Amino acid sequence: MIRLLRELQARLRTAGLPEGEALDLLAKASRLSRKDLLLRLAQPPPPGTAERALALLEKRLTGYPLQYLLGEVEFFGLPLKVAEGVLIPRPETEGLVELSLNLPLPERPRLLDVGTGTGAIALALKKHLPEAQVWATDTDPKALALARENASRLGLEVTFLQAPLTGGVKDLDLIVSNPPYLPEAYRTQAPQELAFESPQALYAGREGLDVARPLAEEAAEALRPGGFLLLELAPENVGLLAEELKASGWADVEVLRDLLGRDRYLRARRPPQELEGKEGPFRGP
Image (tube, rainbow, N blue to C red; front, side, top):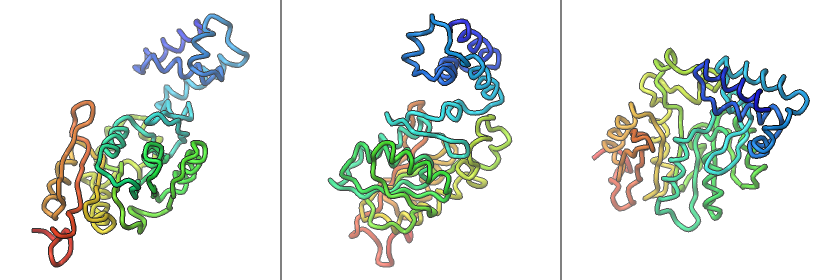
């Protein structure tokens, strides 16, 4: 199989794609794990492997995402099924989970993942906070079906709701979301791979905040006093929303960086009840 692997690597390299993807494509085509494939590289490929590998390669060279070809992605240690048209979980979003787990939450917190997609955030939180009550919303029935399948495969209990934004869930300790946050203008320069994901899960108006803004408004009512809002946004717009939340009365508003040092996450807190104005929370100073 070494000869076939080298052919895949060479064609990926010529196309400007990572050579390391060749192992993933060959493992998929040979119906072996990467570990088993490495142990058998000196052996002839199983029947049909070369044909399947080259077919996968041709599709990858069109820009089709590797994750969709493999049908699975690892997110925060969890193997998640992925499918075309549903947002692929990305490493940046693992940082959102890490930040969530470091918050001073109560012993049995009530958590909501808004725009759950594959269920990645909700399932990772439930895995690491087994005592938590976890909800997840999405408006896309295909995404919700995939999220429910992932939850069933992993044996994790999350309540999935087909609903926009907070879905009417109240008295929450944490609302966490990787909402669509790309400005519409980015469509003209987006990588080929993004064309295969749901545009509704990627783009959000001129500034990229057409979902995050109304989500923050609903969160002001859905969170318990002292509850947290935690969002993943773009470096170009996270600071803008942070200033808007400060002006509207949120407490402890902070922009945090991802592993590459880019402004990426927005953390804010609903003020304790005694600090809210007489006319209700978030009406301005």
